[in-house]
Length: 195
Image (cartoon, rainbow, N blue to C red):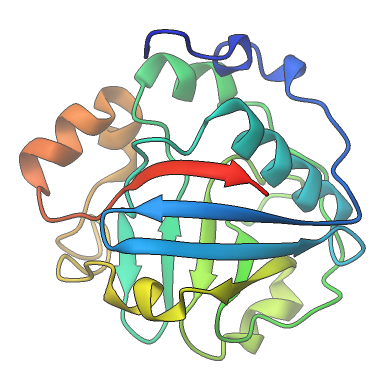
């Protein structure tokens, strides 16, 4: 764990603030900065979770580990296996989608199971409105730095076992040790700040 890590890294119950109705988060990345504007009325549970993750410093040193051209760019897995373990069951209730997964809209990843959103987020590159009916609920959109999002490294493609990109199970067990060793070109977040 990083020195001075927020206690919520190991106790998700402490990350329970209600987000403002609208807010912005600035991401400082290895490619430059981008800003996400969040609208709580779009997806209140997602907006609250994103707010809390940003407030506790969750995104620092997080890699953009799954970036597929024309589809989306995914991030949010902790660099620290102990934090991944602590948060593995800390999911949030589903939000019914009120917005569409349009380019630069930001959405939590989930499984086919209900109420399965955790800490993983994606930025839509293309028009992914087909995801709307599957329950993927956008909570915000990139309002500054779209060019930075477009530059994030996408050379590894889809994750294992479908592609040659990172295996999420191994990321969970070894964090950035695995990603830095096997996928050194991945871009990453230096800092995320609620504005």
